[in-house]
Image 1: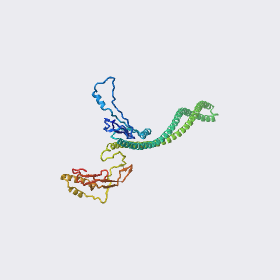
Image 2 (image 1 turned 90 degrees about the horizontal axis):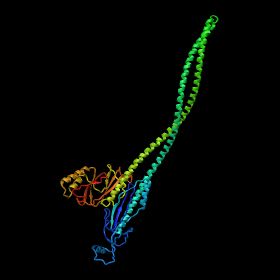
Image 3 (image 1 turned 180 degrees about the vertical axis):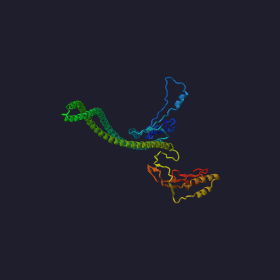
Length: 482
């Protein structure tokens, strides 16, 4: 029996926090936009270590009770294909650890989003299928490691936030209790103050009545005193003027009666004043007692309010710091996923790694870097390198030579050397101020430049090394390439 077989691979990733992948195998002309197909004659069994299943479409013969006429073209073609089979192989490579990591991320509160499936190409033999399977399993392991680090960092930041929020919640709870006690004391104070105000108005009214009666009493007493004085004088002269005495006595009696009347009114007013004063004193004592309780509650409230304000300010500051850190964390995740996707897309291009890897070296602009070379390397002055370029045995127009020399003058602070084909040039950059490796600041980095090919002179290439290692070097094209 002849079997046509091919293996196709796809890989998927989950972005934002985690990654996932799917390994598949297809057999015989899987004509989709994400699969490759090829044909080869193989045995009926795969030895790749991957479980496969062949879906056959055999053409069985048909028997009739009566003799059949001449065979049709379709029947002839069907008989010719007897003993052959065509089908499709689908292979799944599970990753329980990755799936568990995704579940852990959901439980920890990390947002998970999967990217679209990426076609990994097709393998023509079981050995190639096994090799691609191993690569994808290694990618699974790398995704699991990175995902666990992200989950751990997120969980640590969230634990700190939860602890600080608990402190704030406790302070807020105490504040609410003290505020409730204050509100009760304030309500009682307002009631007692209203009663006091009513008693005070009544007291002021009775006091005014008393003051009026007292004034009238004093006036009548003055009249009485005058009459009394006159009576005393008249009494001395009683024997002389009895008639005058009687008149004065009558005046006295009248005044005395008026005085007694006024005195009775005064006594009535005085008694009323004493009663109202007693009511006022009682209300005033109750007011003073409630005022003291209010002052105590108010002091406790002010103390708890100050503690709450301090805790709230600390919480707001910590929340602001957490929000900034979270924003930077989300931005870094997006940059990481974009860089990982770009590296995956270009892994088969020259100059790129064959597998996406983390980049711990972060270069920033280093304007104050210092460049140094090995003592055996000749460093050219501007004029020496200009003469070297002018003497090169190449067919370059004079105007292009002048442009090259002018460009070299613009790089006056650079280091001028000549690269020799196949000879490594080691350059050390020190005094770095803005670059880091694996999150730690670095002050020195070493580059090695090697000339692989140059169509200008075939063996040598004049270059200018920038002071800043992030800019590397400049070299003249002069119509060639290197």
